[in-house]
Length: 295
Image (cartoon, rainbow, N blue to C red; front, top):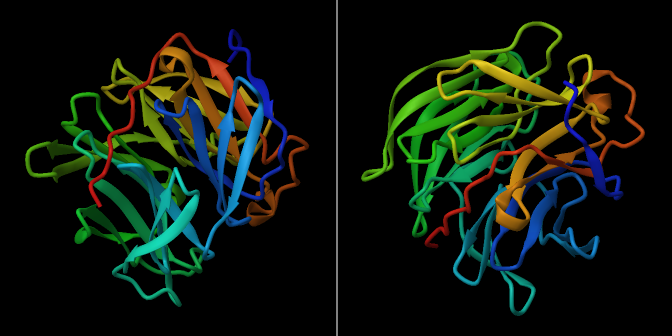
């Protein structure tokens, strides 16, 4: 769609850029290279990117916690301390790391962290065997089973709607969500993608309730915005096929940052010249600061 200036803000060629979260405290974008097994902090003012090697492979996602962030991997939960810039193993996870890994996750408005698991071999035939878990204060609670490829986790501004996507089914699901108990209910189809449009990946929500989702592997990569009633509002084409997740940040949370990867081979496609870089778009919308998770 015309009318948006998509800027390349970090030329890094990450293997699989993912899970961007804006830190208001640090005025920086934290993100993962999942295949490169690194944690990154990008400062859009200076253009500099700090890199920390992860202690394990197969990272899933992370959430901010007091004084740092909590990274969930299939080998356990690790706390990264902002002051010492070190990782510490702080807890186990409820899955077999030889079979499963974690993928997409996001904290609700109260700071409870939701993350979905999936098979290491996600192309394996059959019903989904992954689970959506809720993590809070070191406790894991399984909620949604039969997950194949969890993605698109996000929450409405008032915290009463939980979104998630099943990527390979090209469907986004919305559920009622009780902010007091952290319980989803009444799942229903929020949106479906037609053939050729792409598949839903990571997502975020703006302050007006719009749902923004990365859509890789269509005729191009794009970011799509859906209104709260599930209607496609517009989409923004990107110069990278394998876009992975958007996140609002920057001054006044008014810039949409987008991570991408170099994983076109997974879908039998050629690599995009700018794949793995980070892009930014001024959309006219604003995001919501991330909640902090108690660990």
